[in-house]
Length: 583
Image 1 (cartoon, rainbow, N blue to C red):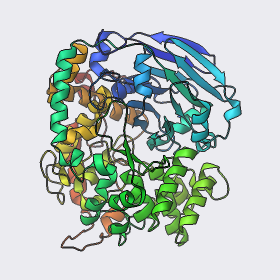
Image 2 (cartoon, one colour; image 1 turned 180 degrees about the vertical axis):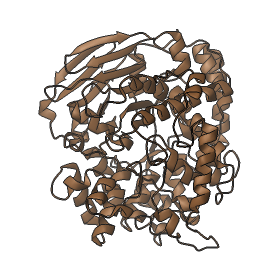
Image 3 (tube, helix red, strand yellow; image 1 turned 120 degrees about the vertical axis):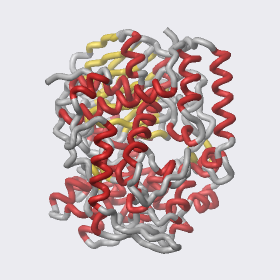
């Protein structure tokens, strides 16, 4: 077998039982890896609550991971989300996925609940469950220091131990699986960390063809202004989007009550570059190097965090944004939900939150003290408890990221339809509505968006399964990655074949959510977007969304996705895609 190792590690921390599963080639070809395989195994126990010991949490690499394929050094983590109740997944960088493959594993499936705080240490085929009670309450940076020499790691902070529903999992200090609160799943299972170190080498079918395919990808990305241009993300990080989104009058400001931040010009990526002279780094095996850090080694925030801890909270202190990002990572919390929950709190209380107060509230949330106990449940539950639901800018209980949907109607539809709740990455319509990739589509219309959203969801699902970074698809297509997959695995799948697998993966997620009771009622947006205009200016008018047009676009999406009028999966469609169906 090329590309895949053919082995999946199964760990039960209740019984300390270690097992090995060896899927057949058919299953690998059907789901590829990463998000696809993780979703397949999660579907076996999806109807259990997230805190049920039987509910698995899955760590999966893809067939391209640990090869020279560009941007393949990533990992998918998947379980049922504590925050949303839907399926939950997060794609994360670092070396964990690469070391996992080198150790001889395509993925890890963890079940059970330990009697004590534990760590899982993997060295090739050897697996040890160790007592980590001495790390209780440790921040992720402190856990990192204690794991020196043990290989790549994934760890939780005190937020997960304290039951914060948007707890994250930090990988190798700088990389974060933030969305959906999957850190809380590890916290409930009493797993403080996992480490993995591999000494093996992955078998590749045709190294010469892989080198040629890689060279084509390097050539295409080098010609991409978005990726490697003077003002692209290689030089400025994802913060390169800050000015662009601001100029389009779609930057969420004051908890989405405005769409323009007056101080944006002093809070953009250029301002960070001037102040911090950041260094470049990136995921294992990636040439884009979109990550940035200060000379002290602190991460420069990603665009979402950069925007939410400034515009969303009307905060003009760059140092506070960097400190807030660092604090979220060390406490182990999703920075998007953390900022959005504080924004909801600010609107409900009528208090302008100072820089110092932002940092104090983050500490309170992570350590579950005072008002932090309530805010640690996310904005939806907090706003509901205060009778102020209009202040929770969330979909399926997950807070929305830093693109106001009144300025990009494809994003409005994508937010509503995402299988993991409010998410910009399920289809990333910003690519064609703002960045003109592959072509520019009018951002102020729902026309033709249903089909484009569906195709983009399928593309991103397969990207998360190969694994390849979604950013590279600003410059390349599945044609290039079809060649890479063939060179690595000897499996001949066309670009359309890969899209078809992506469709199967995404439909499987809709099936799982349907089993959990989700329907069209949850495929919706906060009413603020339909009732209030955004901030017009600079010859751009930002109007409230037309609800009838939105619902009609959603109806069309249900048709092209193969769902019924209520957004529910259809038996005949599921079977046609090769999915299991139990009446």
